[in-house]
Image (tube, rainbow, N blue to C red):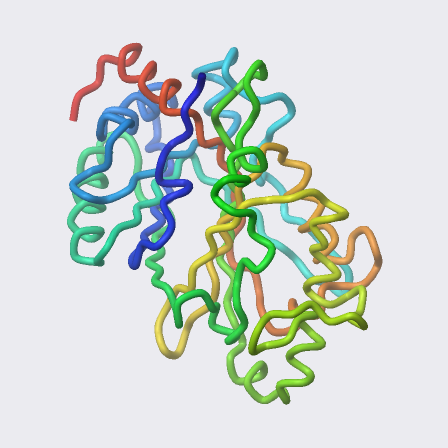
Length: 301
């Protein structure tokens, strides 16, 4: 049975870093996959840090064609919605998501990983994240209310046994900047209408609008996903890292199309106060698949 990378479900960590890499000119994808696989033995953690590794779907297909889910592609084109709204495509070749108990450990481990990969790839995007008021995002609302329990999450997030890519998952990674001044100028009642939930206890509004955030991302309509969203940034420049996992890419892409107004003609009202800065899909293979790349690549750090 294929085993997922453990960090996907390691809740409760207080510090996170997301490192997205691009291959250097003349370097090949298989070498990068082997180098990332060799960063640590995938059944354990790196010095108390959870490490989740993912790859641009087209790159992983080149390396492991028999272990790639069907029809998974990178975020290769901007998603253009109504009213000139754009979700930018910023696809990179690989991602390392590190999470742990404190940022000093994350910092040291991230530097070691960057140094180990330096001859093959450069850091194209780096973001650090941390929890806010236990389980809220920087809008002040509880994030992940509809998240499945850890008992149910693997069935939703992981590609099933007997299927190409079993034990892996598809990751959508986006950075969303918040217009904090505009958002905080809204009365709480209006914020609740935008979200489609109450702010204090996250109860879904019975009269929520279809264009509310809950209405636009209705998982009963698009399918369940498992989210590990985190706040990022500084006091003056901040937002949300959307970290969504699914066994099927279409669940994720359909939600984005709905938010952008592609399918319904009306944008998610929350997008009036948040703006996507990045967008990438990564295939996160099982630990067995990662281990095979160490054996095949012969790369050591």
